[in-house]
Length: 415
Ligand code: LLP
Image 1 (tube, rainbow, N blue to C red):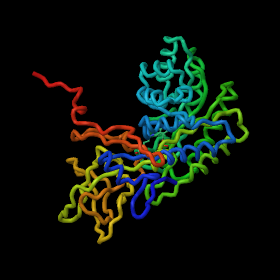
Image 2 (spheres, protein in one colour):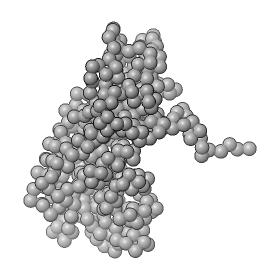
Image 3 (cartoon, protein in one colour):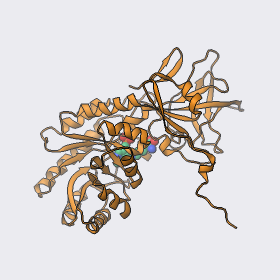
Image 4 (spheres, protein in one colour):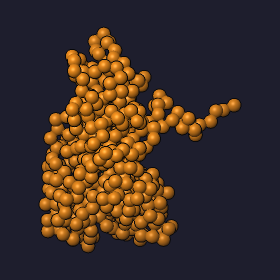
């Protein structure tokens, strides 16, 4: 459930009409709803309330400081994949001791930075990475808390680009190598074994792959116990899908409760969840303005002021996101490809959409709160959009629109 609803044919974010946000901040513009972010976070948190747990929001989904600060105030933990994301969490008031650090290629500088801030855990993906973390920890005189990301080899049944738990993926340590790798970790003097983690993919719409993965890890944890290796926390990653169109993903409540159920009898072990999309996607929209309507030989085009540089998912994954008028108008509808001004055929926001629109109308691209602005670029020397947080009857500009001079501020001409 989100807080983007029509009132008298005008689309609102909480108590603010999107049209007034477009007027004040211009377009294209990302708009987030604080109440929706909070509701989604609480859905996870309350579902596992009877088990020791930590919700580590996946920062990569939406790393705007406004979003992070809303979640930090709820007491959220964070899943990061770079030193940059850790800096954002700290700047937003997040607690580094609730941060887990994922990713296959952590640099020595990033490891040292994370150790300096006392993060909760490094989610480690290979033996060379274990050795690197040990070496850096030794050089700064600390013990690094680690977890191993185990590849449970389950099929997440999602888009191949965002499926990560299969043998063919670059992620994690093979299930059959787990024991040997934990033993290796145990032998390194500046590491402290804390946990086990996995992440099998993103936009999953069924519970069974999550349960299969979790059960595989639990039996591995029992095997490790026989070798005297104690696991304090189990991190099941993120990946719960959301409704873009007619998908029927489990409710976060149902998902988190199923995870907690598998953990029954293991009350000493903390359950960590790393949701990103399920918290942020439907807490955001992208508002864009129709510049021109153009009739091609075979298709009608609505040329809008947002493009693939602002919202990459349709171009990159052929992802489908709902496009709705900000103010519903009467009249005859038509079928349009909604496209941006970037010089690529792949630059589209939506194809074959039935819309009743005229030039200068505003459209809202739904479910844009996750993997939206964070994947934006300056391709075609286009400024990245403004980002606005709505909180009841208030709006806060949480990122100003970029300006053209900023785009080449770090560049130099040559003689
Ligand atoms: N934890 C780890 C280790 C991850 O790699 C990811 C996402 C998450 C948590 C959060 O997953 P979520 O709950 O958001 O599904 N750009 C793609 C999605 C890439 C996801 C990458 N990893 C998209 O726009 O669909």
